[in-house]
Image (cartoon, rainbow, N blue to C red; front, side, top):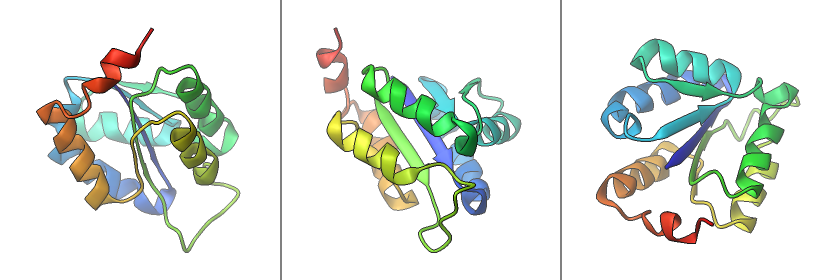
Length: 132
C-alpha cells in the first residue's frame, strides 16, 4: 500500500517518533512524504521514502494529484491547528481530496495509530480490491 505522510514544522518531531514506533509496519509499504518530512523520516528510520517537493512549494499538490489518480491508500498529516501558515502544506485541500476519493486520513497521532495498526491487521485490504 502507498502511505502518504505530511507534517507541519511544529509536528516534525512527532512524525519522526511515530515513524520510529511503527517502522516495522511502514517498512512493508511504500512511503511518500513531502521533502523535509521525508528526509527526516529517512534519517531516523533508514526507511526509503519517496519524496515530493516541500509542502509549501508544490508537495501538497503532488499529494493531491496522487490521491486523484487513485495511487494513495492512506494519508497521515500532522498539523498544528493553532498555527496555520501559508508556508505550510494546504491541509484542508489534502483532507478534502481524501474525503472525495475515500482515502483514510489521520490528522492526529491517536487516529494515525488506529489506521496504522488497522493496516497491519489487514483492515485496509479493501483498497486493493478497488484498484484498476
